[in-house]
Length: 217
Image (tube, rainbow, N blue to C red; front, side, top):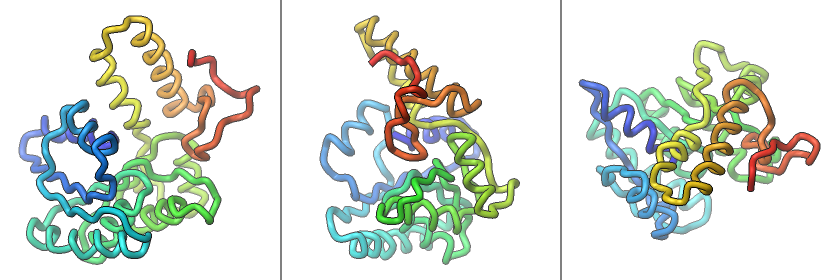
């Protein structure tokens, strides 16, 4: 879902060659195929088919299968998304090969080191050249960690871009309106800091009731 807005934008730019690598970390139809179909994504150029495994095995499998693709295609930039094992594995491969890395959804922090995702986020941000932050608190997190401001770009939440693009597919006008209001609230918070949404992406935990937005549903 995070890939879709960028895939559309890059496809519209003359002279840009964008290749999609599907690691296979999420392989169930409801966690993979449905998003390519519903969001109109092109088929991946490469599929690594890593499947399920321990964190170490899965990360290692992605790295060993992604490295030959980087050596073959010699990309100018590798874009990685979110905070899963695929994210940190691809970022490490590219960084070690001297390829620039861009992290979409950079700077989010839970500060809970028992979460594998937190480790993935921090390591990925450390090796990334371009950090695309979804919110002001993400920018502040990166600044507090000593990341140079010229590497950080506040771009908003790409998940909301995907939601907005998908809204016209809804035939139920009431459902469409409700989701549009939620999307509007999320976008205002991501880009301006007002107001805090019902579930903050920086913590993945519900906000206090007194600070929840009034989004329906």
